[in-house]
Image (cartoon, rainbow, N blue to C red; front, side, top):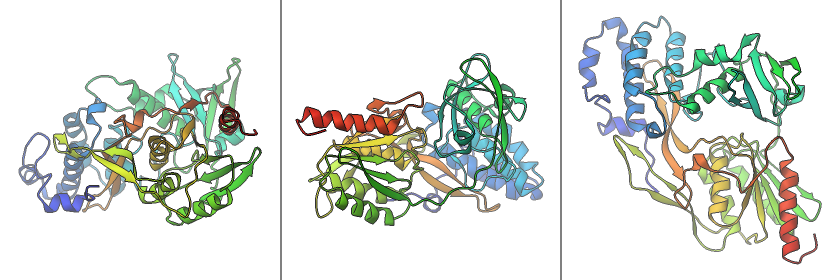
Length: 419
């Protein structure tokens, strides 16, 4: 694996000292009045770094030079740190990438996309709900797959979406439109929202979605299902303790006929946590992913990420991994890797489609922090992670766990084992 690349190492080696157009940044900064220097330098650092290191320009229609022309004067005119932060947030929105965002967005900002609903724009200007996050307040109050969102807080959804859509595109992109509708549906940070919905049968209704206080739940839970099938729910790959907890669960499931691993509510984490878990299912080293790194105008040569076998025993029975739209980042890499090493079938919906490892960036003068997609991830057959599809799709709000159990039961029957 290549060594980690940070903004500090980039600056230390002189990378990024030219703008995308090849203009020395110092000559641009020298033209700014003294009171603009702080914001000018932070904006230029943001634009230059992403211009050289962001990895999905080929998949977007973003005109990055147009971003510079449109936003730089507005950034320099900002009269406060919060106003500048809003400009930075808008710049990142031009990339319509859920994995590229501020770490500390302004308090009054709209939520990021895919907060509790996944929607797709319809031709009539509404947004059709295709997935509802199971643990969310939206699910609690009765938002359902198939509902059409007509308005948020009485404002037409198409009007809100038009206001947040990227404005610096070289040509229209349906993905950018979808991204804008998902931001519009999510509402404002820290605030309840009222959705005006149209049901599949044509009835209109309004639902108030309150702000739901997060419930404390463990990162890992496990239980035995009917048919001697083990279930391990992993809600995060961000804590090293997850590995030992999964190990303990596997010990209890050593003699089960199959295993379900549920990452439906998992927002991701670190490969250093996910990889040793994968190692419990193999007896020899195996590749599980391929990666590249953006390096100026091109990409590095790909390298292969490997999994090493681990543990006092190898779990050898069939495994199913459950996914939804809220399986994100490493919780997409884990199902992909388990399939890549030949040890799992993926059951559920497509995932969040964030297809890269991220790098952090801190703007030194204002102290604003953000992350951006930097290293695209591919499966062992070199297919992009952001296009990953489940082996057994379960759409329309159907029971994903039941589909997984059916998959394992059918396998047992085929093998001549008791169901």
